[in-house]
Image (tube, rainbow, N blue to C red; front, side):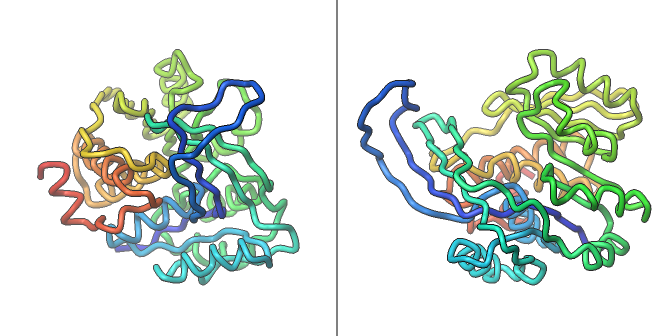
Amino acid sequence: MQPLCVIGSTTWDTLIHLPELPAPSAQTLWATRSYQALGSTGAGKALNLKALGCNVSLHSVIGADPAGDAIHAALAEHGLAEHLCRSSAATEQHTNLMDSNGRRLSIFTQPPAPSGLDLSVTAQHLARCRLAIINIFDYARPCLAQARALGTPIWTDLHDYDLGNPYHQAFIDAAEVIFLASDNLPDYRAFMQQCIAAGKQLVVCTHAERGASLLAADGTWLEKPALPISQLRDSNGAGDAFFSGFVYAYLNRYPLADCLRLAAAAGALCVESDRLCNPALNAPALLARAGF
């Protein structure tokens, strides 16, 4: 399969599970469990795509510190550490509070590095990849122009986009395919239609346990429910797993309805583990979980 290029980001996170998210008042809480683990959207997408057999490179920035070392070691196990650039800034870290229903409150305890990608290396990979997955981080912005100049299709994930936020606009303008969540978009269908009118090929909007919606350039509108799960272990990375399942299916020429079902299967497998990528994930497991 022709290579894929994932750009930004990787973090080292502290995850704290609570029965419910805390009210805004002074209090003492007892966690049901807590641990540190690899996090963020670049790592999540790259790991899931790699598990599904895709030829993928990950380009991200980490610090020259113990958290950066931990990220490097975790990704090296999967052959994804080669293009991690070390920055003089500290490694990005998050603290995620999780409730029993999978809802998350994320605290960015160390912000992303302002720069540090080796743009000569990203240019080489973008020139030969089938598509570029460019995540919404400032240090990834130069890669938007690189990919467009090379004619490389760009897919991006706006996550919990709030309409009109100027931070996201360059990624929206550059991408051919857009994913986002409906958390902050009550009228998500209108935004999806706006994107298609602006020339996008596909827009996919996820609704957590309520499934996902898709609008294609030819007017196709699809809605698919989420798949049932055996247990909710950790919802971190579910959106990235969903994205990756869709990419895998799309590149293997599945119909769009099947792409959504395989994406839902990848998301379901993810939340049944406490990692960004379920160790049991591979292409046969994905197809089986989707009922194919």
